[in-house]
Amino acid sequence: MRPSSPESDDASLVVLGAGYAGVRLAREVARRSKGQLPVVLVDRHPVHVIRTELYEIGAIAQEQGAPLRLAVPIDRVLRSSGVKFRTGRVEGIDLADRTVKLADGALRYRYLAICLGSAIAYYGVPGALENTHQVYRLTGALMLAQALKSVESASAGWPIGRRPQVLVVGGGSTGTEVAAEIATTDWAEVSGGSARPPHVTLIAGAVPFLAGLPEGLVRHARELLAKAEVELSEGINVTRVDPGRLSLHDGSSREFDVAVWCAGVQAPPVVRALEVPHGKAGRLKVRETLELPDHPEVFAVGDVAEFEDPKTRMLVPATAQAALAEASVAAANLVRRAAGEPLRPFVYREKGMIVAVGRRRASGSLRRVTVWGSPAALLKRLTEREYSAAVRLGRSPPGL
Image: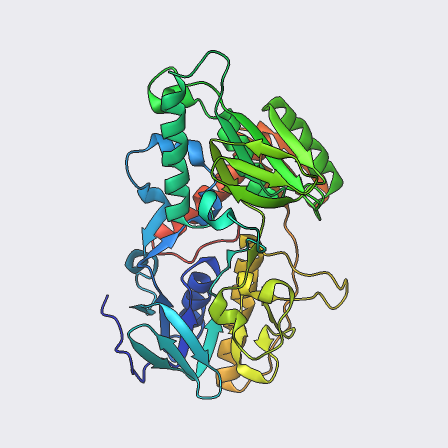
């Protein structure tokens, strides 16, 4: 696919970020406008990463090299869509001049969709960046998988009784899924030796475990974590991370062989730098139509956006499901704005939430009905595989 030039006039709509929201929005605008609203999708990487599967650390460690199933080439994702793709790192956005500054040039736009996802939030904890792993990016998941595999391989020669110590910081869905996945992986099979099962501790901190999720889902998740022999530590925040040692607010500390940071995310620096209204963690506050206040030509979708439901006053969660739903509405509104038609408000309808708690086990809530165990895990896997298959075939991806 031939990239557009840095100063191309073809960029009526520039979409920043080729994640779940960016891909859905770009394809939808091209389809709805029948090519009348030229679209340029910008991302620093030429692949679309299936981020909802990055927690599958055991499976990633078992594969040789980078798992191709998790990174789909953008040219395949955008096949026959009419969307152009430009590789570039976004370094700034000039809202007044309607220009996106890239590392190697710039793009002018008539309309802009900011779908840049999120960055890891370390909350100023000393040593957290340097001494922990993460799964919010494919490279991070690959590095974590290799670190675990190396530690497990070495454990065969350790003194009797010593097991690899793995600490996972963050009691949200990501931390829960990562901790359970590591605990239930057969590391002896993965490492090809006499590896010892790790002792996994999930440090939820002061924020309640799986805060904001339905009570039934949380209760069953606790039960599944216990069955997976994951130790759950609640109520105490991390204050410092040194090589091999994590310090807690109560003055205690824990030693580790591998530590994973899943404590939260924030808006990327380029988004936080914009002189517009911001919400929690630097996210962009948006109107009901998903536009920025005072900038009707700019839409924010996915993890970068903070949308408050006007009826419930609750914030729409930063999930792939919500990002895809927002992307469809934003795409329709972009086409309407270009045609001079009235825009429609975004109304979020939660389909349900499923949290994987180990291999072949999950806890979920679907339309107020709690599902858990292997049926919930199967449903989650089928949904993720349906999305992956669609993007590989160059089709508009379904919701998650």
